[in-house]
Image (tube, rainbow, N blue to C red; front, side, top):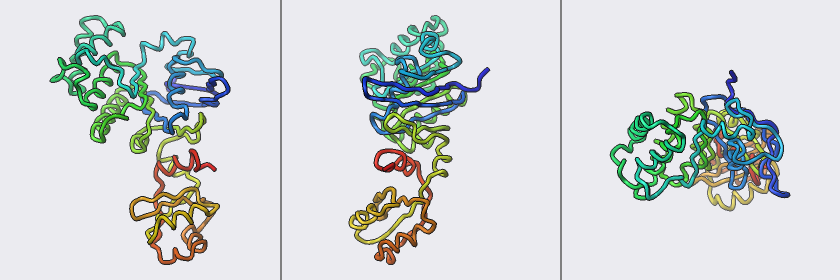
Length: 308
């Protein structure tokens, strides 16, 4: 039996002349959380839809849970859960009725369905709100209900399309604890996100831009493999200083963080602090330190202007 939940080879999707996803290659081991990070319109959601058989690839092949997609998409649908950023709930139904409906959709027998509903209510802290309408719940509660509904049939694969875009940091953190519980039980999870802290929690990560995977690997491996050195600068008149620094040809980007500038210098430069001071003599008065790369630094160097 394959240890890979997903294998996609040269996967592309065109809409007319527009290439939404371009020759994507992807391998996701079973029981892992794999993230897609990228700006709006980069192809994340299109990729998820091709992997589930909702969208037919223009070229390439996809194997999900041992099934050939999209040819065997109908067999796959009973083995996956799908949760979108818009929370696909029926607002006028109660919490329990939403779970009951989803249980029926997936053909769970009545006795087993009743057991699963009670289990989901307890697992996701909704047992005291079972009779409340979904439309009356807070953002975090709706999120938990959406996850409970998406997993009521105990799917082998769970797909989450920007699932935490409408909730606060505390609820996001709790949500991720629940995802790790599911992963520990053997569920493979694909998640698209805009949040760097969420992306860092994934076991594996693809950074997408303009339909292309620009970087692929564990978050820490991606940070370690960066082709830049991060220099943090504390100095006066940071706005003017930034305007000067970003003109330098071997500076990939510069961003202000409070009283500091975070500057990404190409690794072609062996002594980036000395080089910056040579280029801009006023930096001799500044406090300059080498800093550990962050996932945001990886993202900046892989997407948009960071690649120019």
